Image (cartoon, rainbow, N blue to C red):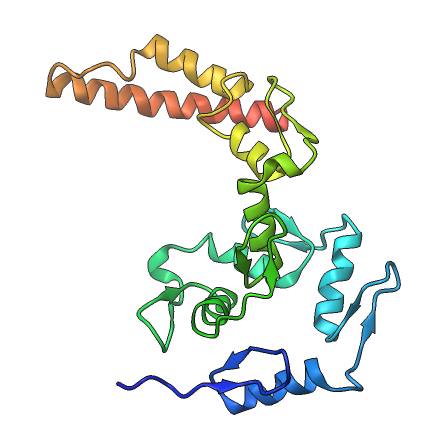
Length: 235
Protein backbone atom coordinates (compact mmCIF):
# COMPACT_ATOMS: atom_id res chain seq x y z
CA UNK A 1 0.00 0.00 0.00
CA UNK A 2 1.46 3.38 -1.07
CA UNK A 3 2.08 6.24 1.29
CA UNK A 4 -0.81 8.69 1.73
CA UNK A 5 -0.48 12.14 0.12
CA UNK A 6 0.57 15.01 2.35
CA UNK A 7 -0.82 18.55 2.34
CA UNK A 8 1.81 21.13 3.40
CA UNK A 9 0.88 24.59 4.62
CA UNK A 10 2.17 27.22 2.16
CA UNK A 11 1.95 30.10 4.63
CA UNK A 12 5.45 31.72 4.92
CA UNK A 13 7.38 30.35 7.89
CA UNK A 14 4.89 27.55 8.64
CA UNK A 15 6.19 24.05 8.02
CA UNK A 16 3.14 22.09 9.14
CA UNK A 17 2.00 19.16 7.04
CA UNK A 18 -1.43 17.48 7.14
CA UNK A 19 -2.89 14.19 5.96
CA UNK A 20 -6.06 15.72 4.51
CA UNK A 21 -7.02 18.88 2.70
CA UNK A 22 -9.79 19.46 5.25
CA UNK A 23 -7.31 19.50 8.15
CA UNK A 24 -5.06 21.88 6.21
CA UNK A 25 -8.00 24.21 5.56
CA UNK A 26 -9.00 24.16 9.24
CA UNK A 27 -5.41 24.95 10.22
CA UNK A 28 -5.20 27.94 7.84
CA UNK A 29 -8.54 29.29 9.07
CA UNK A 30 -7.62 28.94 12.74
CA UNK A 31 -3.92 29.86 12.73
CA UNK A 32 -3.36 32.15 9.77
CA UNK A 33 -6.60 34.09 9.39
CA UNK A 34 -6.18 37.81 10.08
CA UNK A 35 -9.48 37.84 11.93
CA UNK A 36 -9.06 34.57 13.78
CA UNK A 37 -11.48 34.31 16.71
CA UNK A 38 -9.78 34.75 20.07
CA UNK A 39 -11.17 33.51 23.36
CA UNK A 40 -9.57 35.46 26.22
CA UNK A 41 -9.31 34.10 29.74
CA UNK A 42 -10.94 36.47 32.23
CA UNK A 43 -8.62 35.26 35.00
CA UNK A 44 -5.30 35.89 33.25
CA UNK A 45 -3.93 37.43 30.05
CA UNK A 46 -3.93 34.26 27.94
CA UNK A 47 -5.97 33.92 24.75
CA UNK A 48 -7.09 30.78 22.95
CA UNK A 49 -8.16 30.01 19.41
CA UNK A 50 -11.03 27.73 20.38
CA UNK A 51 -13.63 27.79 23.14
CA UNK A 52 -12.76 24.18 24.01
CA UNK A 53 -9.13 25.11 24.74
CA UNK A 54 -10.29 28.08 26.81
CA UNK A 55 -12.57 25.89 28.92
CA UNK A 56 -9.76 23.41 29.52
CA UNK A 57 -7.46 26.26 30.54
CA UNK A 58 -9.97 27.79 32.98
CA UNK A 59 -10.02 24.52 34.92
CA UNK A 60 -6.34 25.12 35.78
CA UNK A 61 -7.32 28.21 37.79
CA UNK A 62 -9.33 26.21 40.31
CA UNK A 63 -8.80 23.13 42.46
CA UNK A 64 -12.46 22.13 42.05
CA UNK A 65 -12.85 18.65 40.57
CA UNK A 66 -16.46 18.12 39.63
CA UNK A 67 -16.17 14.93 37.55
CA UNK A 68 -16.16 11.85 39.78
CA UNK A 69 -15.35 8.26 38.84
CA UNK A 70 -18.26 5.98 39.70
CA UNK A 71 -15.91 3.03 40.22
CA UNK A 72 -13.26 4.35 42.62
CA UNK A 73 -14.50 7.80 43.62
CA UNK A 74 -11.52 9.71 42.26
CA UNK A 75 -12.40 13.19 40.96
CA UNK A 76 -11.14 15.14 37.97
CA UNK A 77 -11.35 18.71 36.74
CA UNK A 78 -12.15 17.74 33.15
CA UNK A 79 -14.61 15.28 31.66
CA UNK A 80 -12.22 13.91 29.04
CA UNK A 81 -9.64 13.20 31.75
CA UNK A 82 -12.29 11.26 33.67
CA UNK A 83 -13.16 9.23 30.56
CA UNK A 84 -9.51 8.31 30.05
CA UNK A 85 -9.26 7.31 33.72
CA UNK A 86 -12.39 5.14 33.52
CA UNK A 87 -10.69 3.10 30.80
CA UNK A 88 -8.13 1.97 33.38
CA UNK A 89 -10.86 0.06 35.25
CA UNK A 90 -11.58 -2.12 32.22
CA UNK A 91 -9.72 -5.30 31.40
CA UNK A 92 -7.42 -4.82 28.44
CA UNK A 93 -9.50 -7.28 26.44
CA UNK A 94 -12.60 -5.15 27.06
CA UNK A 95 -11.03 -1.85 26.02
CA UNK A 96 -11.76 -0.65 22.49
CA UNK A 97 -8.60 -0.72 20.40
CA UNK A 98 -7.97 2.13 17.98
CA UNK A 99 -5.53 1.34 15.20
CA UNK A 100 -3.39 3.88 13.40
CA UNK A 101 -4.16 3.78 9.66
CA UNK A 102 -0.55 4.73 8.83
CA UNK A 103 1.39 2.22 10.92
CA UNK A 104 0.80 -0.88 13.14
CA UNK A 105 0.47 1.17 16.37
CA UNK A 106 -2.61 0.55 18.57
CA UNK A 107 -4.13 2.84 21.20
CA UNK A 108 -6.82 2.64 23.87
CA UNK A 109 -7.97 6.27 23.54
CA UNK A 110 -8.67 8.74 20.74
CA UNK A 111 -6.45 11.45 22.29
CA UNK A 112 -3.57 8.96 22.35
CA UNK A 113 -4.12 8.07 18.70
CA UNK A 114 -4.48 11.73 17.74
CA UNK A 115 -1.24 12.71 19.49
CA UNK A 116 0.56 9.78 17.87
CA UNK A 117 -0.49 10.89 14.38
CA UNK A 118 0.26 14.52 15.19
CA UNK A 119 3.77 13.85 16.49
CA UNK A 120 4.85 10.84 14.42
CA UNK A 121 3.20 11.17 11.03
CA UNK A 122 2.58 14.92 10.75
CA UNK A 123 5.71 15.97 12.68
CA UNK A 124 3.77 18.65 14.54
CA UNK A 125 5.95 19.31 17.57
CA UNK A 126 5.26 22.91 18.54
CA UNK A 127 6.52 22.81 22.14
CA UNK A 128 10.29 23.30 22.30
CA UNK A 129 12.45 22.70 25.37
CA UNK A 130 14.35 25.85 26.37
CA UNK A 131 17.18 23.76 27.84
CA UNK A 132 17.85 21.45 24.88
CA UNK A 133 16.85 20.91 21.26
CA UNK A 134 13.94 18.50 21.84
CA UNK A 135 10.42 19.31 20.67
CA UNK A 136 7.08 17.84 21.72
CA UNK A 137 3.55 17.62 20.36
CA UNK A 138 1.83 18.59 23.63
CA UNK A 139 2.76 20.86 26.52
CA UNK A 140 2.33 18.04 29.06
CA UNK A 141 5.03 15.97 27.33
CA UNK A 142 7.35 18.98 27.44
CA UNK A 143 6.68 19.42 31.17
CA UNK A 144 7.42 15.75 31.87
CA UNK A 145 10.63 16.04 29.86
CA UNK A 146 11.80 19.10 31.81
CA UNK A 147 10.95 17.41 35.11
CA UNK A 148 12.90 14.28 34.17
CA UNK A 149 15.87 15.69 32.24
CA UNK A 150 16.38 19.21 33.57
CA UNK A 151 15.46 19.11 37.29
CA UNK A 152 18.30 21.48 38.18
CA UNK A 153 16.36 24.27 36.49
CA UNK A 154 13.34 23.95 38.76
CA UNK A 155 12.81 24.79 42.40
CA UNK A 156 12.40 21.83 44.77
CA UNK A 157 9.04 22.32 46.46
CA UNK A 158 7.61 18.85 47.14
CA UNK A 159 8.65 17.03 50.32
CA UNK A 160 7.92 13.54 51.59
CA UNK A 161 6.20 13.65 54.99
CA UNK A 162 7.73 10.30 55.98
CA UNK A 163 11.41 10.81 55.17
CA UNK A 164 13.89 13.38 53.86
CA UNK A 165 13.10 12.83 50.17
CA UNK A 166 12.26 15.94 48.15
CA UNK A 167 11.55 16.62 44.49
CA UNK A 168 10.54 19.37 42.10
CA UNK A 169 7.97 16.99 40.61
CA UNK A 170 4.70 15.98 42.28
CA UNK A 171 4.63 12.84 40.14
CA UNK A 172 8.11 11.81 41.31
CA UNK A 173 7.00 12.33 44.92
CA UNK A 174 3.92 10.16 44.28
CA UNK A 175 6.12 7.40 42.83
CA UNK A 176 8.49 7.71 45.79
CA UNK A 177 5.68 7.23 48.33
CA UNK A 178 4.31 4.22 46.45
CA UNK A 179 5.68 0.70 47.14
CA UNK A 180 8.46 -0.26 47.27
CA UNK A 181 10.30 3.06 47.46
CA UNK A 182 9.78 4.95 50.73
CA UNK A 183 10.29 2.41 53.52
CA UNK A 184 9.29 5.01 56.11
CA UNK A 185 5.68 4.98 54.95
CA UNK A 186 3.62 3.32 57.75
CA UNK A 187 1.84 0.82 55.51
CA UNK A 188 5.11 -0.34 54.01
CA UNK A 189 6.56 -0.84 57.49
CA UNK A 190 3.56 -3.00 58.41
CA UNK A 191 4.00 -5.02 55.24
CA UNK A 192 7.70 -5.48 55.94
CA UNK A 193 7.01 -6.67 59.49
CA UNK A 194 4.38 -9.16 58.32
CA UNK A 195 6.67 -10.58 55.65
CA UNK A 196 9.53 -10.94 58.14
CA UNK A 197 7.33 -12.67 60.72
CA UNK A 198 5.80 -14.98 58.13
CA UNK A 199 9.09 -15.85 56.49
CA UNK A 200 7.93 -14.75 53.04
CA UNK A 201 10.70 -14.33 50.52
CA UNK A 202 12.64 -17.35 51.80
CA UNK A 203 13.51 -20.18 49.35
CA UNK A 204 10.80 -22.85 49.27
CA UNK A 205 12.05 -26.30 50.30
CA UNK A 206 9.19 -28.41 48.96
CA UNK A 207 5.87 -28.25 47.17
CA UNK A 208 4.12 -28.98 50.46
CA UNK A 209 5.81 -25.99 52.03
CA UNK A 210 4.89 -23.97 48.95
CA UNK A 211 1.21 -24.76 49.51
CA UNK A 212 1.59 -23.82 53.18
CA UNK A 213 3.15 -20.46 52.34
CA UNK A 214 0.44 -19.83 49.73
CA UNK A 215 -2.24 -20.32 52.38
CA UNK A 216 -0.34 -18.07 54.81
CA UNK A 217 -0.11 -15.39 52.13
CA UNK A 218 -3.89 -15.49 51.65
CA UNK A 219 -4.39 -14.99 55.39
CA UNK A 220 -1.80 -12.23 55.36
CA UNK A 221 -3.55 -10.37 52.53
CA UNK A 222 -6.88 -10.50 54.41
CA UNK A 223 -5.20 -9.09 57.54
CA UNK A 224 -3.40 -6.45 55.51
CA UNK A 225 -6.62 -5.39 53.79
CA UNK A 226 -8.25 -4.95 57.20
CA UNK A 227 -5.34 -2.83 58.40
CA UNK A 228 -5.53 -0.65 55.26
CA UNK A 229 -9.26 -0.13 55.80
CA UNK A 230 -8.66 0.92 59.40
CA UNK A 231 -5.71 3.14 58.55
CA UNK A 232 -7.47 5.06 55.79
CA UNK A 233 -11.09 5.09 56.92
CA UNK A 234 -10.90 4.46 60.67
CA UNK A 235 -13.32 1.53 60.56
